[in-house]
Length: 106
Image (cartoon, rainbow, N blue to C red):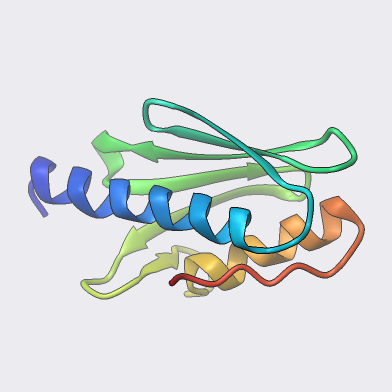
């Protein structure tokens, strides 16, 4: 994947994560600074989603740990267990926020 292809795919993913967080009624505030998207939950905790250009990955930092996602040509997949980005991100958002949240792409 070229740098420009990665940037295009990663930007689309960050926009989709932000839209998905805005679409659920879970009190998630989104703040964007360049390639870093911060999800601030109702309890004032944060989950950070950012791009890693050198690795061609999207990284997620949450209380439960760090997660790395690579693009498989169709979806962003966790490099450890193959989970899709939105399904994987829903888990720490739910556990950290204290109530079930399902994020899904539009």
